[in-house]
Length: 124
Image 1 (cartoon, rainbow, N blue to C red):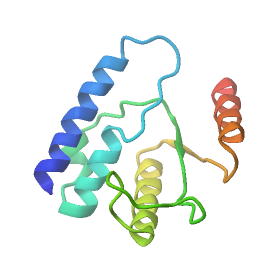
Image 2 (cartoon, rainbow, N blue to C red):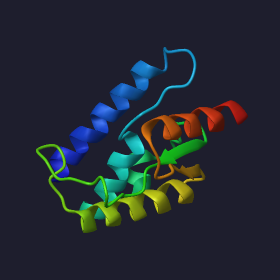
Image 3 (cartoon, helix red, strand yellow):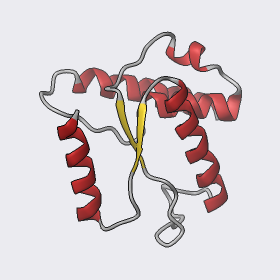
Image 4 (cartoon, one colour):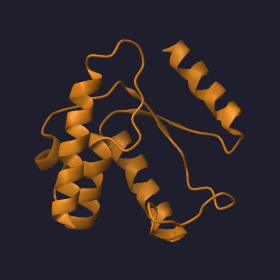
C-alpha cells in the first residue's frame, strides 16, 4: 500500500509541475496533498515527511462530501461508503490544518456545482 501511495505522490507532483505552465485556474482531482494525507492515514507517514513545507496549491480548495444518493463502488472506487466518509473527514481536516480555505460542494446538479465553483473562484 505504501509503495502505491508513494507512486501516487510522485504522479501528483509531476501533474503539479505540468500545470505550472498553464495560465488561469487549474483544478486537480486527487492531488499531492490527497496522496500525502492517504500516506498519513493509512501508513502513518507524517505530512511533514511527505510534503515538507510545500503548500503547492492556491488557498481555495473544493471538497465534495460523500453523497449516499449517488455513491457507487466500481473498479476505480473499491471502498465502501463508510471508508469514503472517513477519507473525506481526514482530507477536510488535513486541508484546513495546512491553512487552505475549504469550500464544500453543494449536493446539487452538476450545473449548479459548476456555477458554485465559478462564482467562488471569481471572488478570489
